[in-house]
Image 1 (cartoon, rainbow, N blue to C red):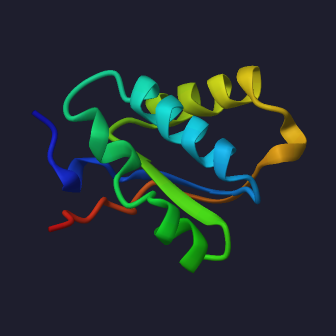
Image 2 (image 1 turned 45 degrees about the vertical axis):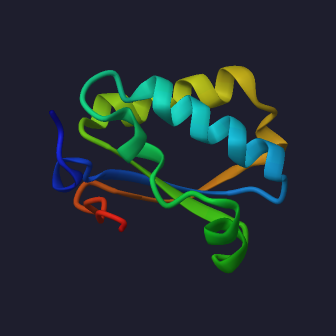
Length: 97
């Protein structure tokens, strides 16, 4: 089972469309192939998104999962509905409540 600290390969995305946010959450769950897939999209609530100026961060246990996430996002969503604003290989997820 993966732990929060293992989800350190992050990608931060900006979108002004709440529906896109929910699609990104589903794609993050899909892309994180092993362990607790919900950690990948943890902290990506509507309130988190709003309080971060429509920007949200997803975290994966492998850089390959992050690459797969972006591949699926590019395949399914219009490129003018979202944009990558950051990436890190050392940005572990934080356990919430």
